[in-house]
Length: 172
Image 1 (cartoon, rainbow, N blue to C red):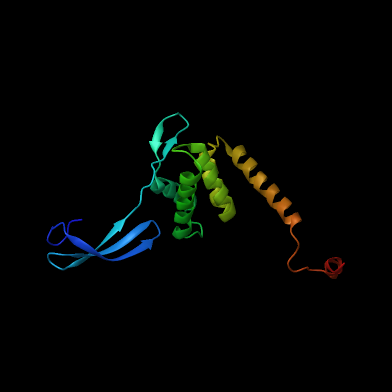
Image 2: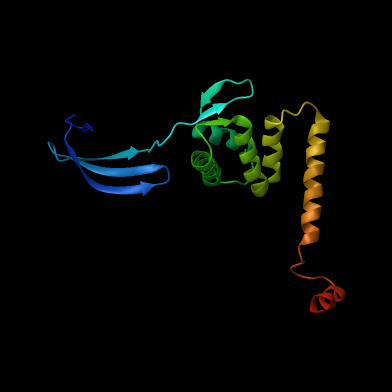
């Protein structure tokens, strides 16, 4: 690691801290005694994505983050949540899958996270991922979401019953 001030290669690490996507190191040059900070990202294994047309491309967490950001544009979702989704997907791919991953698996993983986070973002991402050709595709997907919500709502108890009849049923 060359000093950015005197360009000498000798330095010592004064402090190391783990950050979200790597390690932050505070260094001191042994020649000029000035301090500088370096950021290191650990690359354990390269992932290759097999696209729909059978082309291979190196996995990029930045590209994944960008596509999720596009789906979440103008929605009340913080950049930290978007980055966490992308990093969690990358981690899961590294831990649970081989070095070659089909793009549809990545797309499905994103959809699984977005449906929990925001339905509008889910529909946006889904429209590109599933390649909707007309408005009926959108309507079908929205109807599917509505149906799933109705089923989930019936399975849940009301937190605050609105009638005395409901209160009596809960006591029984």
